[in-house]
Amino acid sequence: MIRRGLSPLVLACLAATWFVWGSTYLAIKFALASFPPFFQIGTRFLVAGILLLLWAWWRGQRMPTLIQWRNAMIVGALMLVGNTGGVAYTEQTVASGLVVAFIAIVPVLMTIASLPFGIRPSRLEVVGIGLGFLGVLLLVRAEAFTASPAGLVAMIIAALGWSIGSVLSQHVLPLAPASTGFASEMICGGGILMMLSLLAGETVHWPPQPLAAAAWLYLAIFGSLIAFCAYMVLLANTRPALASSNSFVNPVIGMLLGVYLGGETVTGHEWLAVGIIVLGVAVLILGRENSQSVTLTSPGP
Image (cartoon, rainbow, N blue to C red; front, side, top):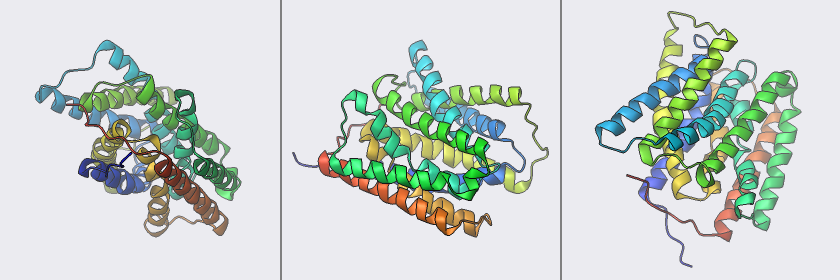
């Protein structure tokens, strides 16, 4: 079989998920100064989702059906509430660079979650899975996570939620096509997060600090609208391993930004753990690319 090259659309989406998402973890930390975790993420996704849905309606795109809204509720709860909400919660006690490093295990979990749907890993992918789990084991034994058991539990839920939600959106719970699907997922996930914010009794510091407000705007526009939509396009057009390849770029960007802009401290043990995770993800993706060609389709209208 002749391998097809990656289209400009896929390359642009890869760049967005690699570099924009690599910086959003530090932006979440900055926004926490005025916006508590569930409120911060909930409002961010509600605003982005409503704007995207209005844009799709203005362009004449078909609105989601009731079944597609149901799917969006389930997938949004897993990918946005479980993952992004968990990340923001953890960053209250754990450095943003280490949080993004933990999330790097997602491609490994997605590969495992894809097994029931007939997607089998190659031998090289199995090696990558083993390295990924070894790196995570070292990372969770580091001082940052041992000092924050609640943060560790939140990160485990976050990684599992994103992985399971991604796979289910591909095989079991399809969203509405194109922009309306992304918008419905953000609206549903944002709504659930706002309910959690109310139940948790979160309080917003108003007026917000200028840096916190700027970080929130960056997260809503770049993190939610641009990078999240790019990720969903990748899920619809590539294999799971390539769609989540940002996971071996994001830790490097996130940790460097955390150290140099956020004043965070990362120990040698933690850098070693992250290096093993990144190596494992790189091997996993290389194994996927060598074993099967990437099938590309056009995104929905």
